[in-house]
Picture (cartoon, rainbow, N blue to C red):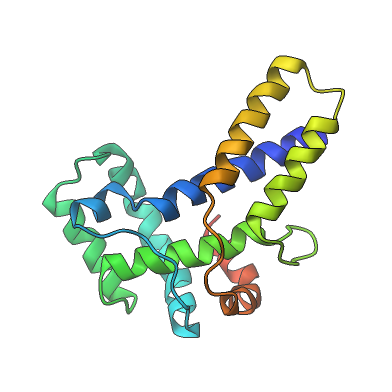
Length: 176
């Protein structure tokens, strides 16, 4: 059962990242932008960490807005981005996507990085080999994991890995 719990946690993160990186949040799409991985600077990572409290404060509004955020919400996002040193909410979104891609590949215990797609492939093999998982549940897990593997973009800037690892503890604390 520990394997299933670990898998579900990783799958949720992987799906979130795959969707988040492949397609920007609705508010960014409305602005005509798309999330992308960028080469991170130390200043951007520190700003990302400091922005988490403010982003948490407006996340409920963002969820409620769904595909139709209003102009007021977009202005709030811009204020948060600029407050934390970003040129725009689009830059904040790109930094978030780049940090999240690396975080998805960090082992929670060792802190070592494995490409998220490779981790998902290993999880897939583990699930397929696990005879304790009921067939219907296994089929669903395998389908979801295969979809996540297909949609997970590769790490474009491997130099981001060491930078994010350096701030891992602070990132995890800020995102709690």
